[in-house]
Length: 135
Image (cartoon, rainbow, N blue to C red; front, side):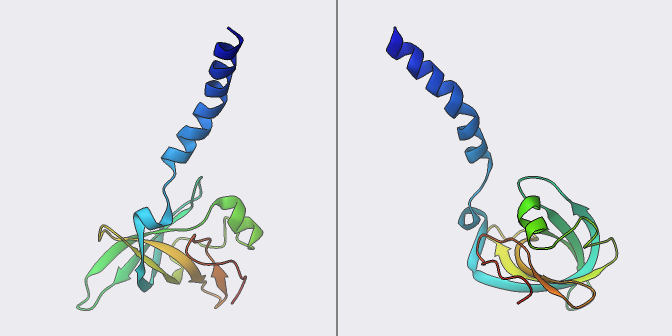
């Protein structure tokens, strides 16, 4: 009986942890380290939420076609520690994003660095990059 109670208790504790791990993806499952990219465009939407922030930008491609890219950044707390604030990126701002393409070819990227309108380059929290402030 005691063993059954211990197993049930352990399952109750582990279940929420397991669910969050399953819900969160690994970098390599979603993005390709062999496909670096640089995007430049105007911000159309910013979503601050866990587990990652998302910035959407309109990128004008060769030939004039405009495509809206979703760019994944780090967790909000990690970005706050790097100096980001919710008003660091505003609608209409022109950003340059250095990062990696989505594996599935969709218009998504994982950001390593973002160049802000004032010229500052900031770490964007990518699992593929390393922290380093304004390098």
